[in-house]
Length: 228
Length: 228
DNA sequence: GCGCAGAAGTAGACATTGTCAACATTGACT
DNA sequence: AGTCAATGTTGACAATGTCTACTTCTGCGC
Image (tube, rainbow over all chains, first blue to last red; front, side):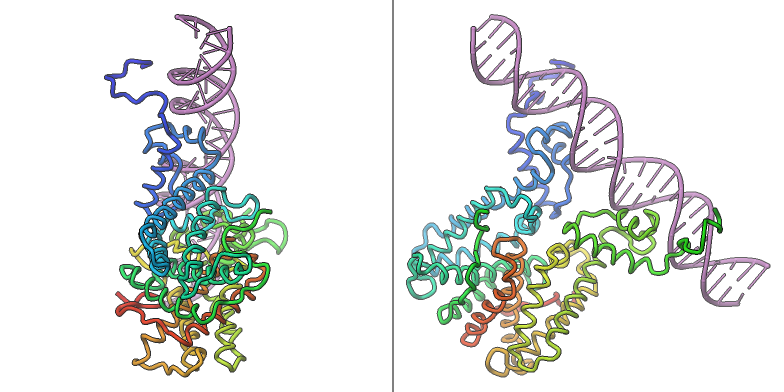
């Protein structure tokens, strides 16, 4: 059957955009099964290609997972930026970020775990650049909101303020991250109240931070690790 | 070779305590490889036993992983209770708990991820009882410290105070949990400063909580999910 | 137009893994 | 001694990640 299978609907030899298709399939499977333990072959099947085709686009399963994780980061970053776009109040923006972060995790735990669960957290190669970028843009949103006064007073994004801003971000981020994962793991719940919870936790955090921004130790970085 | 292999040093047919041996081997492999993707067969090899022997003690790989996770929880609970044992000041106890929690995670990320990364977070069966118990005893330590005045004022563990106490615990726990995982995933660092960081974050959290304890929404549970 | 290099996809093979079923060995209780 | 259940062993099977060799197409220079 070299060229005449049946009709014109037969799949062409070349897929067109297998890379995207595979990542998409992976996102689907991840959402459905909520497990990182799907097989490359399954994705290939879903994309309607042979079990080895993905290897033309990804070196490893690890590589594929990294791409999926990156896609997840981009999704999250977009969701957060969309949520803050039309909000003026820095406080509102911060709340929106928190909601997006927490709900994003609760709605797709497996993806979230893949993203943050450091499938390749080993320091041998570090996270792929896309992940770092998404994390950076996440951080940038926070910096904006905070410097604009989300903590109750303006905190311009200057060198003199870096430690303070980083301290605030550290508090905020780890608080939301922790809340998300506790919800995801059912150690706090019910997860339907995710946004209520994030709001109330944020509230108390802001009230607290308004009084005392932690002095984080020198040499601490917040966000993707510095180069090197 | 029914009974005379060489000398008396030959391994007896029955291992004696394979269950423990397998879990121990798993903990070892987990610490060494920092990956949850080891094989049952590898554990059997390490224990010097045939590849199927573990199935007499664990139904699945899942089951084995659950046992390992439970062991991790017990380890953590013990570490925390040891750390707080000889401390009078509730503030000190809280700090010790925070340190133990964060450092425990940083020192063995893979185990921590297994424990909290919900290998079996699906609501089909829930976490095994041992895990729930460990989480409970963790929570109990927090309740003690808080009711003893870790937040700057006594907060007796009465029904009237439950919501407030739960709110404080939620803040504390998610904060520490998030900090730990950000450290583990290298989104904050360096991890050598884990205890400094936990101390400074705790400090600001306490200062904040002293002012405002969040009003968590009604119906929210903190800790292992209520029965049902 | 055309032919060719290389990208994209396929087919087959291999070691490893989780798991099942059938069999062997052993200690404990009667 | 004799039986039984617990514990271990061996062998088999399908699925998976990944390697190598082969095929089919696409784009590019001529």
